[in-house]
Every structure is written in C-alpha cells, then in structure tokens.
Amino acid sequence: MSHNKIKIGTAEPNRTSQLNIDINDLNNVNVSSATANQILTYNGTNWANGSVEGGLVFAGEGATQNYSGSSASGVTTSDDIEFYASSPVNNLSATITSSSNWISSITLPAGTYKLQAVAGLELSASSGLLEYRWHDGTSLLGATGNCGYTDDRVGNPCIAIVSPGSSTTYTVRITTSTSVTALASQGARHAERGYILIEKVL
Amino acid sequence: MTHLLDEINSVNQATNGQVTLDIEDVNDITISNVLTNDMLQVSGSAFVNSTSDSLVKRSSYTIRKSGYNVPSIAGYDTSGVGLEYGGFYLACRHNYYGNTIMNFFNNSDNFILTPNLNGNSGYITGVNIKANQPTLLLCYSALSEDSSSTAYIDLQWQTDTGTVLGPKTRFKRLANNNRNTVVGYINPSVDTDVGLKRIASSGSYGWMMSEVTRHNFIMIAKRVF
Image (tube, rainbow over all chains, first blue to last red; front, side):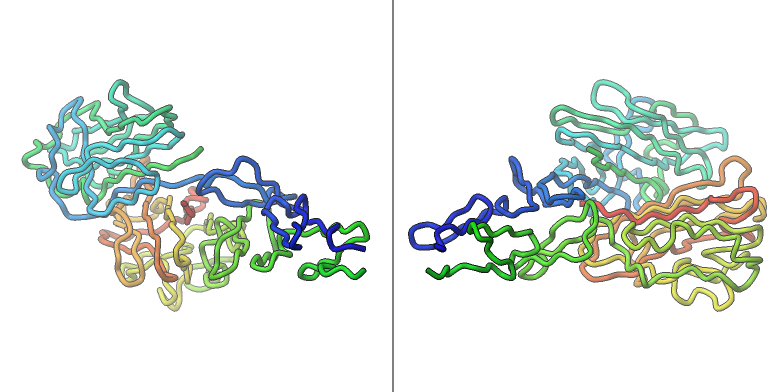
C-alpha cells in the first residue's frame, strides 16, 4: 500500500506528500458558489453555504425630545414624519438620513423588507386623528397606521412589505391630519412612543 | 510499504486509500447535538455549531405556577415555555384574577420580569439575553377587562440596570382598544437580564388575564443578524 493513494474527498497528496483539503472535500459538506459573509448551516443532511438572513433597522429610544425640534416640514397631509434616535440600530446596510438625530428617511438596498412604524404626534382635540403610511417617493404603501388624542391611542402601526429591486428611499407620510397640534407646539410624545422597525425578511 | 497517513484524526484509511471525513472530524470543529438550521460559528479558535435562535438562557427562567390569586395550574398555557432550541417564545394565559407576570392590582412592582417581583404572585423570572446576540424584543398584550375603566399602564423594555431598550407603550382598559405592542432591541456585550418596566400607571389594573381574553400575552425575543 502506498500513501500516495490517500485521498480526502477529491484531494490527493502532492509529490511531497502534502495534502491540502478544501471544506468541500469533507463528506457531509456541500458548498456551492459561496460569497462573502455567508455561513454554514445544517440542512438536515449536510452542511451547506447560505446567506445570513434577517437584520433590522430600529429607531425608537423613548427619548424625551420635542417634535418641534425636528426638521419636519409640517404636520399636515403629505408631510413626512421624522423619528428621533441618537443611536439607531442599522445592520441592514441602510442609509439613514437624519438631522440632529431626527430621522427623515431610510434608504434600503435591494431585498425584501417589512416596514413598520408607529407615530405619536400630539393632537389638540379628542376627536382628532393622525393617519400615516409608508411612502417610497412615488406611492403610498401598505396598511395605514393611526394615533389619537390620548397616549393609549398610540401604537397602531403602518406596515408594508416591500421588495425594492434597487436602492430605494422610504418615508412615513401623513395621510390624514385632523386636529394635529401645530409643529411648533409639538411636545415629546412622538419621540417617547414612536418608532421605526424595518426587518429584512428575504 | 507502510503508509504514512493511515489515519487522519480518528478516521482510518480504507484499503483503497480513501479517507472519508465528516466535518466534525476536522481538528478545529466541534459539533454536538446538531439540529436542522444550526450554523457554524467561530468560538475562540474553533468552529462550533450554534442554534440560530438560542438567545435566552433556557434554564434560567421559569413561570411561577402557584401563589396569590392563582386558581389552578390548569389556567396556564405553558406550551410555548422552555423550548430548548426554540428561542424565547412565551404564550401564556390565565384564568380570571390570575396573573402570570404581575400581581393583580399591584402598583408597587417595577420590573414585571424579575427574579423577586413579589413573593406571593405569579411571575416570570430570569429572562436573560446572551452576549453578542442582536435581539428584537416584543411583547403583545392587553389589560384585563376587570381593570378599572380608566386604568392604564406604560411599559418599556429595559435592562435590569435601567438601560432603555425601546419606546414607551401604553395599555389601557378599553373595550375595543386595550391591546398594544412593546418593542425593544438589545445587543449586549455580556449576558444581560431584560424586562418590562412600568413607567407610569393609573387606577387598578389587571394584566393579561381573563377567561374572556385568553392568549392575550405573547413575548418574543427574536435574534436578528
């Protein structure tokens, strides 16, 4: 018997009896077209390469910051809502556009995402209503969120599933504004109770 | 002629010279109790298999099943509790007047999830997020219909040392609007206890219980990458 017959997977020894094996030479590993940042996962039979799914953008710190200090253009229909976060979580490689920690838009790379946001702009009358939806610069997207006069009426989110084929910028846009307190008089409720949560789903 | 490489690690060479290795035969890979969807992670100088969502110390949290105003253990749905590899997912319910995470009409407890919430109440203890596990925290719930009509409670995810993890969220006893979701995020550098802190409250409130509105308390700690 000769040691030159030794093989590991497809790897064979060279003339100096050195044996260099790749991970694919292992019996229960099936790596194909691997790209950066992939991980090995167990599929029930073999270990195979796959992309790391998931990741999120989260902006919602419960901070006491008056919305009057934001850079928002207004609080009426078609105005975009800003969200306060001094240290937003971003492991989606998103581009977060902000000024003085007030986030005005989020640009996402190609992929599929669940967009969710809760706004808490203050109202001046118990009959007031704020409604809002996600917007991609062209169209309103997904389900409408709303908030009301009292704090318990904050928490109804706008939600959309989007699959941009290329980098796309999203905002949260007001669609109904009834008895919403003027921007200059807005207090801290929105920063304390509002948030943006974007999750990568595919 | 002797062969110089008749064994690699503990795997012997076949008569045709073939050595068949599995991944765990590689020197710097340690795999134990592997499950579907496990992944390999670097741990020190080795690769080890890791369950992608095992972010809570499974052995460190329990649900108390006896105590004040707890009529019977049968009132609990603990089917989602203690999933060894399912991450943290609790879907709990209880009979009227019962309580899983906060004593009925109890206005003195700060952390709803705490090892020593109340010596005589039902509670969940020891929710602990592992280090370096980016985790989305969610709690979907409602106030009991048995609460005072104007009762409310503001909740917020925090660590046991008071680090804020998300926005405040209000739950109020309303016929058609008593549900809400508390959202938080943490990526701790060391294993960290987390819980829902009461920021404010008013009136006499009951929490997530009633025979009418069962299954109204779901908590999720979801790993994100």
